[in-house]
Image 1 (cartoon, one colour):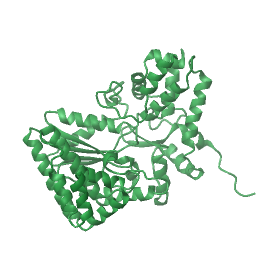
Image 2 (image 1 turned 135 degrees about the horizontal axis):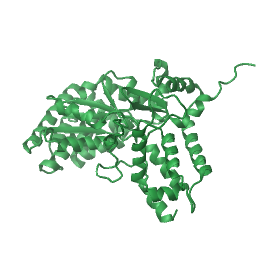
Image 3 (image 1 turned 90 degrees about the horizontal axis):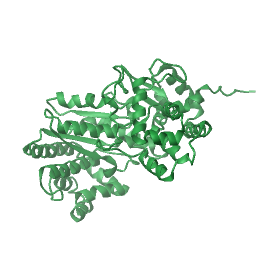
Image 4 (image 1 turned 180 degrees about the vertical axis):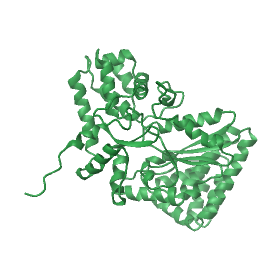
Length: 437
C-alpha cells in the first residue's frame, strides 16, 4: 500500500473520535435491516426518543454503554431527531461532561447542576438571541450559592462563572471548598436550579421551541485511577442512585452513567448494546455471523476504507479477512475501527498475509487478556455459558473492573444479554491450577 494511502486510511480509523451525525463515516446502524433483523435488536435511538415524544411531563433518562459503542453518536442523532421532529421541536443542549468536570475524581450534585445551568444558558443564548457572556441565571446561581465564601465569590467576579466552574475542575482544593459550602443547602440548590431551568425553557419557548432537551454526555467515563476508582464509583452511585431525584431538572434530560451502575440502580437504564454478531443461544466457538450484524459491521469498515484500500491491505482474500476482524471485535464498533487502524499501521508494500494478520490478532488478544486475573475466570466462564451476569455483592468490584476493561460486552435480542469478549475466550479453556503437592 502506498504511504499516502496508509496515511489517509490511518486517519480515517481513529478509534476514539466521536463522529458528527453528518460525517460520511457515520453509520446509522439501526437503519440497517437484513431479513427483518436489526443489528442491535431494536432501533435504539427511536426507542429512547419515544420516551420524550410520548410524555406530557419532563422525562429524565439514564443511558449507559461502553466507550466507543456508538452512544455519543446515537445521542447526537437523538438530539438532531428531536430538534427536527415537528411534534417534538425540542432545543437540544449537549453538555460534554469532560469540559466541566474532572472525570478522574469523585463527582457531586452541586458542581454537576452548576455545569448544566451554565451550558444550558449558553445554548439558549446562542439559539434564541442574547449574549452568552452577559450575567444571567448562571451568575445569579453562583452568587447565591457562594455568598458566604469570599474567595469563591471573588473568583466568579474576576473571571466569570464559566471560568469559575473550570477552576473547580482543575483545582481539587477549590472543588472541595465549593462542595462543603453547598452541602448544607442542596435542597435549596435543587429548587433554585429547577427555577433557573424553567426560566431558560421559557426563553426557548418564546423563540418557538416546544422545550429543552438536556443531554449530559461522557459521564460514563467516570473512571478515577487504580487507587481512586472505588471512590469515583461510590460517588457516581451516590449521585445517580441515592440522589437521582435531585437530577430531575424540570425539563427533559438524559444522563450517561458508568456501566457498572447497571448492577446498583433499580431505575431503568437504557443500555446501548454492541452490534449483535450472533444469537444469544449460539454457543458454538466461533459462532455463525448473523447477516444483519455482519452487514452493519462491514458497512462501518467500508465507510472507513474502500474496497480498493481493503484489497491493498489484505490482498485478494480481503473479504474473509474483514470477517475475521469483525469476529474478533465482538461487535464493538470502536474495537473494529482500532483493528483496522492496527492493520493499516502494520501493512507495507505488499498486503498482510494470513501470518501477519494472526500476529496482529494475537497482539490484540494479549492486550485484553492482560486485564483478566486468574480468579476472574470462574465469573467469565459463567457469563459465557449463561449469557447473563449474576454475581454476589462481594464480586461487584471484580465485575466493575471487567466491564470497565471491556472484557464483558452487552447485546440485545428480544432481551438484554451479555457475553465475554472473543479476544479473551481462549483463557476460559485454561485448566485450573493444581492445588497442593
